[in-house]
Image: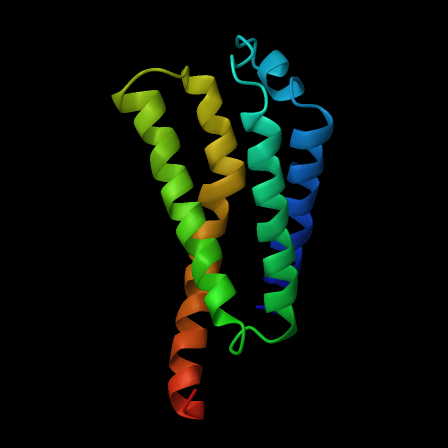
Length: 128
């Protein structure tokens, strides 16, 4: 549990730095037009950075900090569903963009769910 949260924290902080420092790189690599509102990508990067800090804090005691795990899990599920909707339902983003949802959201959902479930169960045992 601890190592998954630490890895998630470091990964999210790295992705955040990438988004803020090189806001056009992802779009350029995928051959996509750069967004009209360029401030949104680095702004989202800042939020992802805070999630990374949350994962690192949660790694110190996943049961006591289970609320941070719940928030992180929620963002991963909703982020993944949002990308799927934009790519496959609304068709406003090309399928290549879905790669971001696989690496940034999908791979984290099951581990975060298991950690969140553990935190829920253990908090009941501890009376938290």
